[in-house]
Image (cartoon, rainbow, N blue to C red):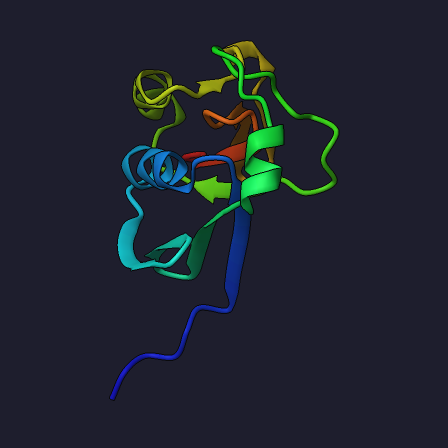
Amino acid sequence: MSQPPPLLTAAVYAKDAGRLAAFYAEALGLDRIEDGAGFVLLASSGIELALVQAPPAGAEAKVVAEPPVVREDTPVKLSFRVDDVEAVRPVVACLGGGLGAPDAAWSWRGQLHLDGWDPEGNVFQLRQPLVA
C-alpha cells in the first residue's frame, strides 16, 4: 500500500522550472519524484514542492537578473528545516541563490531562522533547530 500524499504541497511558478527544481533539490536535499509536462515535483518527508513552468507569455515577460532581484513583496514565503543553515550557504550561492547575512538570523520557537532567495529571486526561509 502506498503512503498518503503529504499534508502540504506548495507550487512555485517559474521562468525556468528545471533550474529551480535543481536548486531546491540540491540545496535542500529534496527528492525529484516526478517530471511532467511543464512541472517538476520534489518531495521530502512532509512536503511536496511543485516547480511549475510559467506559461510562455508570462515566462517571456519575467526578467531574471544576475544576481536575481529579491522579490520581497510577495505575501507567501516557504520555510524549510535544515540541520545547519551555514552549511547550506555555499550550496545556495553556487546554485545562483543567496542567504541573508548571518547577523540577520533570528531565534523563535527553538529554531534559528534566516531568509534567502532562489535563482529567480523568490524568497524562502531556512530554519535550524537550536540545541538547548
